[in-house]
Amino acid sequence: MRYSIRIIILAVFLFLYSCGSSKFDASKKNTPGYKLTAQKIYKNDYRFLFNQDSSYVICLKEFKPTSKYPANALSYFIYNINDSKKIFEDSIHGGSVNWLNKNVVKIKRILEVARKGKGNIIIKYYNVITKEFVPVSTLKLENQN
Image 1 (cartoon, one colour):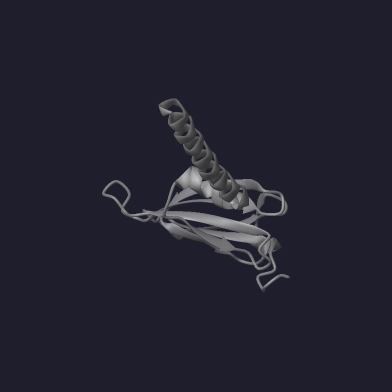
Image 2 (tube, rainbow, N blue to C red):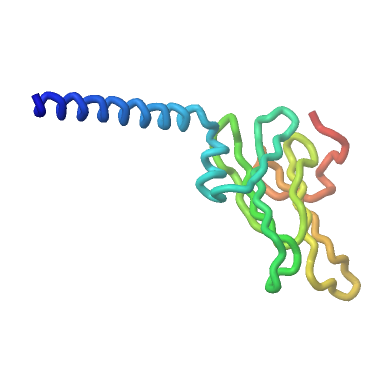
């Protein structure tokens, strides 16, 4: 009798354990790739900025200023949702990252020390289609569709 009770308890335990792990696996399978990548890289406290047609997303993680880096620090990656691939990743100290239009990311970096005769803000534009930085002269600054 004791032997059969132990077997029943073991069977119930294994059944409950297998059901619980399959629910976890199923929820992980339904999680979009960009969210899984963000969880893997940043763990928590990140946010997403989608382009106009939601085919690409920027994942941002902001860090509070420290005595070593008095400006805010920002880590980010750009993810192609249709191809399920991270296409670019970088970090900057002081600045911002946002969409200029559906294909171009504007990366603004504020330099800590301004050089004589030069501005203290650097702006770069990254084209998610060509996967290259592009000069501002080649961009249509109005909203592209």
